[in-house]
Image (tube, rainbow over all chains, first blue to last red; front, side):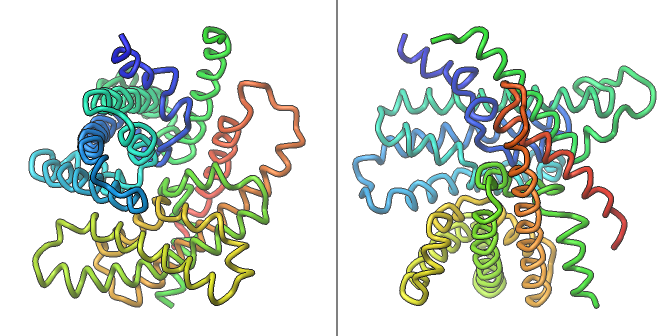
Amino acid sequence: MNQWKNLTKGFFKENPILVLILGTCPALGTTTSGINGLSMGLATTFVLVGSNIFISLLKDFIPDKVRIPSFIVVIASFVIVVELVMRAYLPELFNTLGIFIPLIVVNCIVLGRAEAFACKNTVLSSAIDGLGMGLGFAMALFILGTIREILGSGSVLGHKFIAGDGMLVFILAPGAFIALGYLIMAVNQLKKKYLKD
Amino acid sequence: MEYILLIISTVFVSNIVLTQFLGICPFIGVSNKVETSMGMAAAVTFVIVLATIITYLVYMYILVPLGIEFSRTIVFILIIAALVQMVEIILKKVSITLYQALGIFLPLITTNCCVLGVAVLAVQKDMNLIQATVFSLGNSLGFGFALVTFAGIREQLELLNIPKPMRGAPIALVVAGMLALAFMGFAGIV
């Protein structure tokens, strides 16, 4: 039961983007379409699960004083794995996501989970926590990407449902900020309504 | 002339925060007051320029000759982390006032994606050393410019009566979107 909670807390209650407002850079930069957002989210999920497992395995060996640099080294290694695999098998996607793949290293969510969860908990809970948080992140990116895609180019998952262009501004930079702003507002409203603790 | 154009294009036309989406966390988090955001901007400028020069040299003269370019990410982030620590120690010795002014922002800079982003972009774009330096300077000025402008707007926002679910991050993001719209007006200058 407890593990179930570890998994699901990232979906809504502690959703990294929509509630904690962490990792906004990739959330805005890669969500020009639903699929792009989802792939970025899944890449981050892989890094999160990998680094969480490794850090919780190593937690007894890492001296407290150098823990942040050690975490960064572990995270960066997983990012390099993602980078190389993507460049080899999904070169098109790699080009679209571009700079944001190496920047997973400095994504606050990854380091945040390492510091707040993985270095204090067992391997299994850390893996589940990483998976839940990563999927929550991917879900938020997918929702934001889909909204921007519908408004900006009038298509869902690449299937166009209108003729012409749609409101181009939502594909461009300003639309990203505005869409995320209103999405967080909606979540705030939902939280007030359904999560009364 | 080429360098002036490079600075104009990095500060205004492709502003690092408002069109490239790098460094949004400090942009939303720190920019409540004009004064603190100026401190942040100064610290970031300093670190970005220094980090870009060092990572550029390391990449070109160590990683490329050895054929280990794939380790770029891990090497760059370690250099940046070490650099930030070093800047902190040096500042503490040399100028205690500046250290206290920038103090809290310095450790945060390691995880500011601007720094790693600019370093990676400078290497990716096949620039020479001078271009890379000017590029990093322009980008950090653009970051500072966006941060301070935004802080000025947010100081005014606090006086307004904003609907409750909209307070905090949502309104900040929507305002940032409007600012980005304004910056789109610079498109096509260079």
